[in-house]
Image 1 (tube, rainbow, N blue to C red):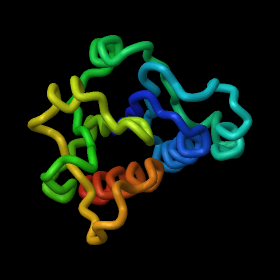
Image 2 (spheres, one colour):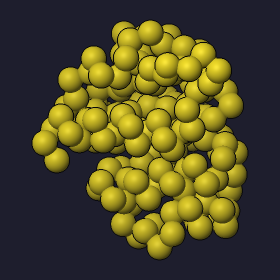
Image 3 (cartoon, rainbow, N blue to C red):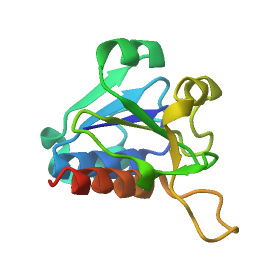
Length: 148
């Protein structure tokens, strides 16, 4: 599996996701304009000393990412209506998440409309989950289904 973050903005979230990817041997892709420098101390601190154990690839744009990484792309948005639990995961799936404050760009949501999912929430007072938590929920469900 792969985790793809489109224009992530908050270094500690990306660092936590990198740590998650290291723990699960999942590739991490950072796409487009990042809201931080890749050597940001908060990013490095959140990932602790696990950076050597995660494969991180930066892609300058969505188009370059699509060309470089084959596989089924599953996108996640608080505005989607189909729950992530409806997915039957495959080992080469790519889990695509948007930045913390903007979510996925409309062009990507349109492109992946048939594979756009949400993590249901019971409270109407919360707009969305923390990005690192959302990635964890979906990734571990995929790994559970795959028996890993």
